Image: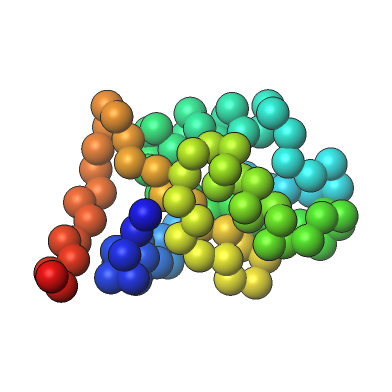
Length: 101
């Protein structure tokens, strides 16, 4: 689980990112989740846009994306989902440590 401090850090890192996936009328499917897992392994932090014609609730879509990819849901703002998953082979993002004891 990410701490509040880590989520704030990741939100700031994601601010300049462009959504690279879109969830439309068909909702979330296995092929999309597979592609997202691959991209998360390379990038660690991504944005996904939920289109207006998506028939599922945005909260459900965000949770499905997070669970299906094993990623952390960093933020759901409007129709944009921010996901983070630490890479096994391409670690780029260093999360701040939570100093509270």
